Amino acid sequence: MKVGFYQFVPEFGNVEKNIQTMVNAVKAADADLIVFPELATSGYLFLEQKEVADTASAVPGPMSDDFSKVAVEKNTAVVVGFPEKADGVYYNSALIATPDGKVQVYRKNHLYNEEKLFFKPGNLGFPTFDVKGIKVGVLICFDHMFPESARTLALEGVQIVCHPANLVLPGFAQITSCSRALENGVFWILANRHGTENRKGRCLSYSGLSRIVDNRGKVLASAGADDTGFYGVEIDPAKALDKKVAPLADLFADRRPELYNEITK
Ligand code: ACM
Picture 1 (cartoon, rainbow, N blue to C red):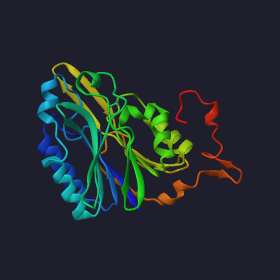
Picture 2 (cartoon, rainbow, N blue to C red):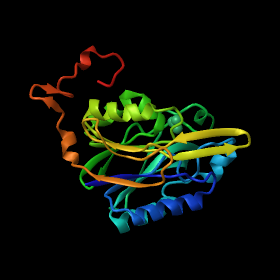
Picture 3 (tube, helix red, strand yellow):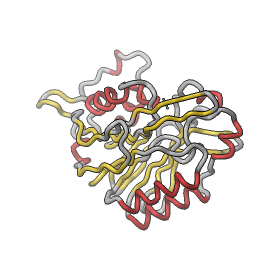
Picture 4 (cartoon, rainbow, N blue to C red):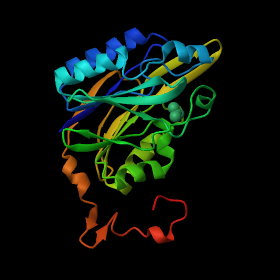
């Protein structure tokens, strides 16, 4: 299976242009699964609720139709972060459009900082998705700082974690992408954005350095801090089903849930 990410600079508020950039990237890429950053249709640095409302999309809707169409045409699964409007409220969500024509969503469970002013926390738990017979999960940015998130997905049998992000904390996700992949024996695709958003005196810089990590924590592909483009590698997701790290040492069978406080049982 060929998996990849597309790192770029979404233009704040220009939903049409950002969608077109991503659809073109899918058309140009050769992959079974492509991950784009968090809030990639809208940009990140919202200053007021109206900006969220003006850039949000419902699923299904015209935005998800665009990604579904190209996912079917290219026989590729596509993961895209976007502001979602559902039942009169807003979520920081990611859609997954699969080659069978389905579009499903994950809603970010751990909102970061001022996101809490604009979005509701996710209400869908940690769903899993089928991509060509492979079990895939999605976490969005700050979710990576909560090991229970990746553990929950891994215990559900997820082989690949897709991680759309808009990283502002220096180097944290480059550490956790390796440690979460290693401790759970899963592949990890971190799709970050880069560039700076300057909005009415507020400024945020995003760190790039997207990467693909294998089930033993080894980096297979990585982008630079300011690179725009598609990066892909061939992986064997079946390796993520084997949790043994030595003949008598198994990441899952050796767990002692009866000893753990609060951690997923
Ligand atoms: C983040 O969760 N976007 C830092």
